[in-house]
Each structure stands twice: as C-alpha cells, then as structure tokens.
Length: 247
Image 1 (cartoon, helix red, strand yellow):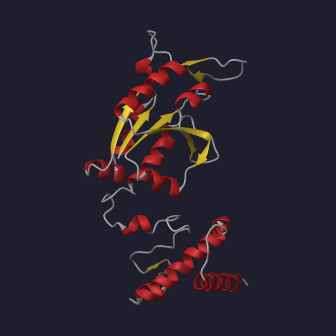
Image 2 (spheres, helix red, strand yellow; image 1 turned 90 degrees about the vertical axis):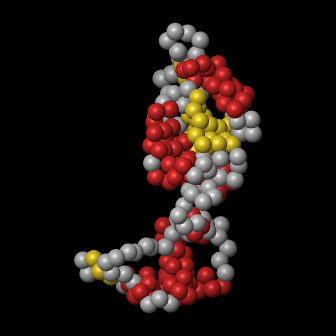
Image 3 (tube, helix red, strand yellow; image 1 turned 45 degrees about the vertical axis):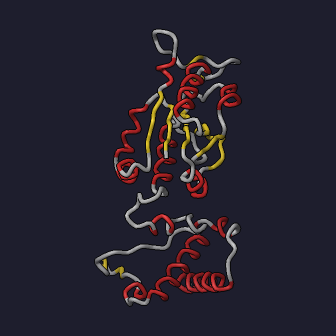
C-alpha cells in the first residue's frame, strides 16, 4: 500500500520508523511518500498561510501551495483519494482502517493553524476524517494514528495474523482481558479457566469478558451488535456476576 502525506512537518513521521509501521515498510507492504507545501510556495519566505477573510484569530492555509502539493502527489499516486484530517470529518474507526487497508493508494492531507481554505476542500478533497472530538495542533499526529492502525491490518505484517482479528473493535466488541506470567501478582491471580488448557472453556470466557467489558465501558456498541442467543446468555451471566460482586 502506498500512503502519500502532505505536511508542513514531514520529519514528525520518523516515529513511523519504529514498531509495526517499520515492519510493514520492511516487508514492502507499506510505502510512505511525502510532499511539503512549502516546496510549492512561490515567494522567498515559502509562505503557506495568510490572515482569514472576515477577521478572527489565527491563520489559514493558502490554496495554491497546498493545491500544487496535492496535484504533485496525485501524479505519483493516480488511484489515491485525498483524505483531509479534520475535526469536522467522519470518525475514524476500525472499520475505516480495515477499508483503507484494502486500497492500493491514499493521500493524507495534514492541516495546520486554523485549517485550510474551504475552497480547497471543494476542489481537491475526497473525504474528511477525524480521530476524535478534540483539536490537535495539526493533522500529523492524526495521520500517524491512521497509518499505524492501517499498517497492522496489511497482509503478513503481524507475526500472528490472528492478533488483528482479535483486537478490540475488530469483532464490534472491546477486547477481553489479557494475562501473562507470573500467575499471581500481589495476590491478584490469573483466572483459573485460562490455566486449565480447556480451549472451549477459554473461548467462552473470553467472549463473555468481551461482551461484559463492552456493556460496562461502551454500551452504545452493543446497540449495533446483533447478539445470538448464546451471546445474550453469556452477557446475562456477566451482568449477574458483576451485580453479585458489587453487593
């Protein structure tokens, strides 16, 4: 997969030379390409922003340098859609990451200051995307979040392909609890079911915990999740056990 990034601060993306994104690049499943709008500015100061019409605080990124950067990126990535990282965009989630992991090319546009000229959105942007209901200093961190989430879903990147399929949100539920050695830490013990080698019982326990955690922490996700009769029974068990432990 080829990911083009348009950013005033491409050096920030050196963080993607570590961890899973690094592995994805080494396995040639991910290629990162960068364009800096300053390289397309026409004045000596490489100006890429100006004061907003109508007044107000901050600066707005100008159309021409950004548009030229996008057009240069499109020449090398002709199949790519341009996604603008914006608080006004559609929420980025696991399904969005999974969908993007299936495309050959994408261009991520990182805004700065108060944002970009709205006319550029109409002229060059195919979609807007947000990683949450808060404002960052720019789109770079959001782009890195997206790239990391996508990289782990690319073929042969993770050591165990099941890791991605069992992540939180991959099934529509939060993940179940995980434990490793030692079996006891400050009198907190690993659940016995995980120690008995009964894989059917382990899978049932993990599903119940995933359902229960989702009910506790993100109940709105269950409204979009069609529970089977068996899953409903497991969730009811979890709720009953939780209420008994609290009483």
